[in-house]
Length: 157
Image 1 (cartoon, rainbow, N blue to C red):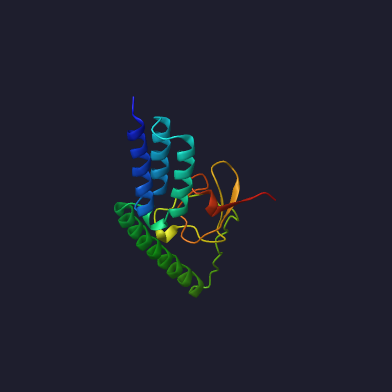
Image 2 (tube, rainbow, N blue to C red; image 1 turned 135 degrees about the horizontal axis):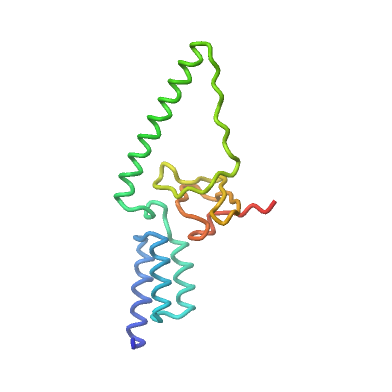
């Protein structure tokens, strides 16, 4: 059984990490939940820490360095794919053909961003896994509506 002093220490440790800003939001929320489930913090402390973690979260901390490297590579590949497509369309048009622009779904399925290059921005629309439609309320959002609900507005029309 943990003593009150040990429990207070867990609360303080988590709070100091959040205050430092050096954490990934989804990971921190999971740690807060586990600490609460283990009985090391009270429900009030858990609520306070979750709110604080969401307020202090930054997109640049939401992907590890390896993810950043992968994101850069995906960005480069995406740019090359766009250039290839543009060249193919230009050749088709020069040869007298027509190019049909791709049809984009108004609320496409949610895709977890892998970095800054594919993060959601203000006004971006998506359909989340629960079938609900959302519009992004911030630039550079790499979180889903469950992890950071303040970044999303549910469309109820």
